[in-house]
Structure formats: structure tokens, C-alpha cells
Length: 313
Image 1 (cartoon, rainbow, N blue to C red):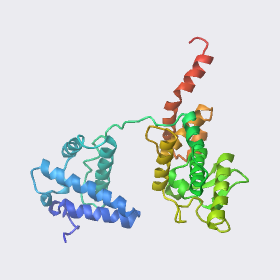
Image 2 (cartoon, helix red, strand yellow):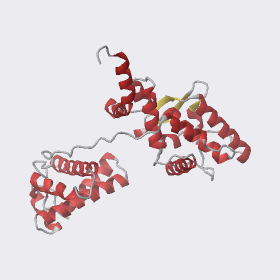
Image 3 (cartoon, rainbow, N blue to C red):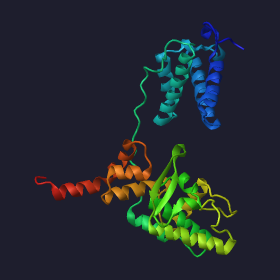
Image 4 (cartoon, one colour):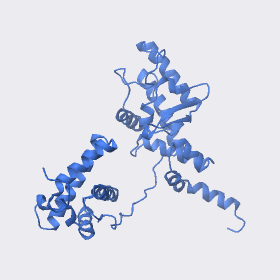
């Protein structure tokens, strides 16, 4: 076991340092095992490519032997097979790794700080037109128990604009039909209240009534609103599969996802005159800049307003 005291960094290969860093992510920051594994993979890949650039074996690579030029060479190797977002994530992992070494007084400078993050593409969100959205919602066959459930889930996604993980996390006591509100547990387990329309509330009521009649599962105790065919909480993956099925059956010929229903909600709200900050609150976005991407898809409405109102167009 190499020593980490004094000035051992020049005798310590990268691998033990990477292991120590990843262990700190779990013990000090509480990162999940999947997140830690992602950091481990990215950093071990970094060490492997740097070894090739330096014509050395991986065990011989030292943390302080890598400078900004080597890191740029590493990033250059990634461009042929990685998206810009993936490259930016890998560079962020390297920066975090070197910041960890600096905090532990194992190295003096962070060579990744001077390396610029690749400029990210900003794709315009894909959404359904109002007519397509209505065709999807109206096309769900509600003659069966699972059909009433599917209709209730899709109505709720469009009515509230919530994420699919938030939908599957809803419990019975989160739904306040009298106030037209629903409690949502968002990212970071943060709670917020979101308005929900009467159509979605009625769809949920019809589903739960049918569920009680067909299976005896009532609403006397708290539990998940939406259940799978085994009577347990439905998963986001199942919702995706169900949405794909109904999209095909209703003639929607392009790929669709629960997140595209969220995009549709935001776009339709803005098109109807809702303010950006109000939509930010409804979506549960921390930053207004995250919501602003939806203004691109509302340009048609802005052009109509411009043509109608500007005195010298």
C-alpha cells in the first residue's frame, strides 16, 4: 500500500489515487454506486489513454506527469466516438479528481482547470402538436382496467408536466382533488405542489374505482396511485413502454417518450400565454435558463404577436 504522506505523489501510480478518490465520493458525498462506477470508468479510461499518449504502461503513469496539453490530447481522442455532453462529463470528472488531490495536498495544480469545456449543442425540445396530443389521449381504450390506468397516467403527465419518475412516485394521499393539486417529489427528493386539471383527476378517479371493483384494491390506506398488473408500483420503464404502444395505435409515427409529453406541456402553456417564470414553477426547474429552451419552440406565437402589434414591421 503506497504512502500518502510527505511527497509520495511522484512514486504513486494513478490507479490507487483514482480508487481513493472514488471511495471518497461514496463515503464523503454519499454518491450512489452507479455514480461511483461511472467516475471510476471515466478516470480509468483517462489513465489508459494518457498512458498511450506518454508511451508508458498504465502502472507507470503519475498524476503530476499529466499537464493540460496531455488532457487536450485525451479529449481529442474522444471526439470520434463520444457526444460533446459525454466529453464534458469526462472532463468534469478529471477536474474533480485533481481538486481532490489538491485538497489532500497530493499535488499542487489542477491541469484540467485551463482546459475549456466543449461547447454544448442546445437541441430544441421535441413536442407534440395540440392535435396530436389530443389524438393520443383520446385514443386510449378505457374498456379495460389497464386501459383506464394508462389513460389516467397519460392525462396526468400532460396535465401537470411532471417527469415520469415523479408520476410513478405519486401516492394516494398526494392527490388533493378538492383543491386541484398534487404533491410531487422531484429531483433531490424536493417536494412541490402542482396544479392538476379536472380531466386528469377524473381519469384517476375512474381508474381507482375500476381497480377497487376488479381487484379489491381500494383507497383506504396510502400507497402508489398507479399499479402494474402485479399490484405493485409501476416503473418509469413500463410507462415508456405503455406510451409507445398507445402512440403506435393512435397513428403517431415518430418516436415519443414521457419527457416529450413534458415538453408538449411547457410549449402549449407558453403558446397559450403563460409566463416563463410560471412555467418554470410548474416544471419544478431550479434555474430559469433551463425553462428558456422552450421559448425557441414558441417562436411562431411570438411572430404572430409581432406581426399583429408592431407599428412599422
